[in-house]
Amino acid sequence: MPRNVWRVTAATALAATLLASAGCSDDGDGDKTKADGAKEAKPLEWGECPAPTPLEGGGQAPPKDWQCATLDVPLDYAKPEGETLPIALIRAKARNQKNRLGSLVFNFGGPGGSGITTLPGAAKEYEALRARYDLVSFDPRGVGRSAPVRCEDDKQLDAYFAEDSTPDTPQEEQGFVDNIRTYREACEKNSDKLLPHVGTSNAARDLDRIRQALGDEKLNYFGISYGTELGGVYAHLFPKNVGRAVFDAVVDPTKTSEEGALGQAKGFQLALGNFAQDCVDRGDECKLQGSTAKEIEANIIKLQKDLAAKPIAGIGDRQLTEGQATNGIAQALYSQELWPLLEQGLDEADGGQGQLLLALSDALNGRDQDGRYSNIGAANTAINCADSKDRYTLAQTKAKLPAFRAASPVFGDFLGWAMMSCTDWPVAGAWETPDVSAPGSAPILVIGNTGDPATPYEGARRMVERLGPGVGVELTYKGEGHGAYNSGDTCVQEAVNAYLIEGKTPAAGTVCTAKADPTGSPTAPPTGSPV
Image (cartoon, rainbow, N blue to C red; front, side):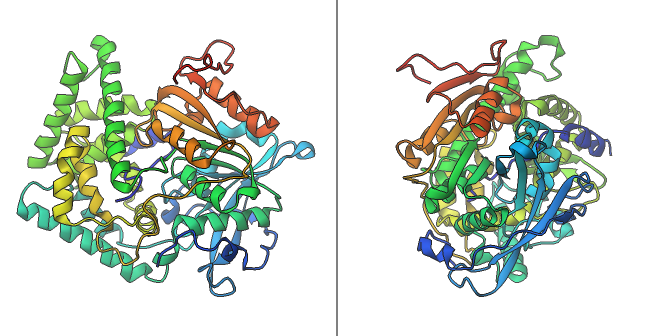
């Protein structure tokens, strides 16, 4: 099962788009010297950026002060002088070139998210960092513009996502298994040569080639969600090449795919409870029925059951199914900014109108208003299945469902059945859990968010432990949503900016809260206090 069944998507500027649409072989770590077998990467040739393709998520071309380039890297690092594939990059040059610190490379998560598309849209949030850094991102191998993994076409994907994802009868179970098999066969048919080479270890090797091509002695890095796993693997492979690095919304490197999915079930359930309690606290302003958070959750469960029996009107001729509704709810829990849309969508669905929840689901699946899909879903599956060794039979999956239902009555079934995503995948997975030990690395700032649904808070502490002594520096954000820096909390942002720009790490155990003090200054807990 994918390490992140539900993927991060930028919440900024998403609300208006949703409302508009609703109105209508083994990668393993291997020998580290293999990554150095190829010739030193050549400097990049930067030029004008085209508009993102549908596979990257579409949209307008970035502003004229953004530049794009392509870096050729080995398809197979065991054959460094053999066939290559292109890695697409984008950058915005530092505003203060005289005091430029170098490049700051971003990975926004997924796996499967397009950095080419995401960074320009989120750039305002990193303006303080652009003062001294060139902001750089990329489409990892298999993603967007970088030799994209291709599976089913747009019409097939509409059918794929509309299928029952939480079967209840033997007939529904067979349909579920057939749906996964058809998708897998399409991936193998359309991307067979690429599938063995898209795992995280190779993406980490690509990161070091990017560092070389940028002309940087060290890699300065900002990883979010899956980007923290990629950053951890990079630090393990190239500890001496780590510059100033930040991990935000941290994937737990100690969890197997099953444990990670259970953690997500608990995380999304926690976030849903927080959403419901917030609705209750607003009294008559809340549109949802229920005088307690539990009553609101019970009504959501009833909605799921009703949709399983009979889908409701969606967008155009597409209906809202149980799986798509669950997907849409999960999408809205990624950011507190989307809670009003979730409230509205649930209220409308209770009245038989599923447009908004379907639009939220589409956003998570990478579907635009014209029915075109990005390749985030295909890349997500291919990368996760290249990484994880776990493969589950139907019987094994059914045996584990009670634990998932206990973890979350709303999301448990969905995440439990998703463990079969890599069943019979044509490529063997590389690991049970990734090795992120990085002795000799520069300090890495690791941020955990107590209300994070997709990457539960405990993962930050375990990342710090696995990075090793003197490497990980933990900062806690007591807030909601997926990630901390983009929450707008001044305490978190000042701590991160101080490290990336001035090299000053916060005190280990520093805690920031969603309601930061008026100065916005980080505050460290007393020695020995639990975080």
